[in-house]
Length: 56
Figure 1 (cartoon, one colour):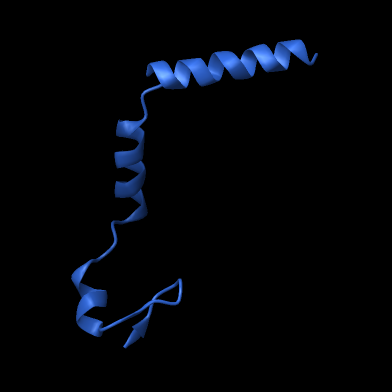
Figure 2 (cartoon, helix red, strand yellow; figure 1 turned 180 degrees about the horizontal axis):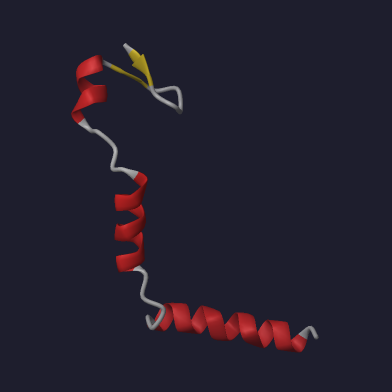
């Protein structure tokens, strides 16, 4: 058995069955999914700017 980082144990077959992506591939996938023009992100950005302006 192989102990997972968070304490979960897995068999060696399970541990080898799901290899993790290299950091560069994870970063590329995350950057492709990040779209700052999404309405929710714009709303959060505008809210933060308003709060920052109000607390100056």
